[in-house]
Length: 282
View (cartoon, rainbow, N blue to C red):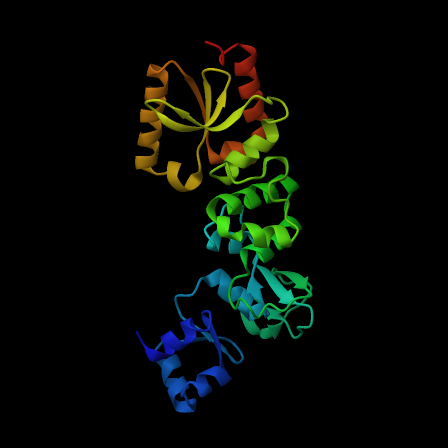
């Protein structure tokens, strides 16, 4: 690995000119790093690797760090991404730039969405922390989408639990406890839990394994995430599970990502219709 890359990575993936100078990279050396494609100049006085996440680089060009849905997904969490880049910027910052051209000052017509904060964004140079990204996401999306992202953080990043609670996120409130394994599961859970108080999450069925939801004695609801279930092996595994459930005496209702995100009311209606027919009873 190039010495400049090691130096840059040690500083969180973004490095300033004065830090390169302190590390022994003078003007000629810096010019050579740029000519060789080892580093990219992102905005005046700041450099990153060429393979850095493009959305994070757009946030840096503006003058902050990537936040909201894109940041949460970079942390491996569930979130619905925005088409625009969302940037977390310290309240004392000025001279913001356009996200695709750092030579141009940001204008009211800019596509980038800026989240001003009273705290400095310097602790994270490219991507906001999980807690900060969730705080910004909370202000940008419907409340249930935010709760789904928070639930995902509790499930996939349990070490963040205390930091999330300190930041005012409703950890453990109203079933937001990290039990659901995906954000789409949480969205379904939030929509139906008051209509079917007896619905149970993450139930183990002998010979089949754990299912997303179990209603009554034999009605299973499975929520397919986009990441796994939209692949050929994922779909094949789903069909095998459906077969095993049927052989074990269960009925399975399976819903995909698009149905949960865009047609949740119809999904809930379908489940309630199955219950009204008695599909959940032996």
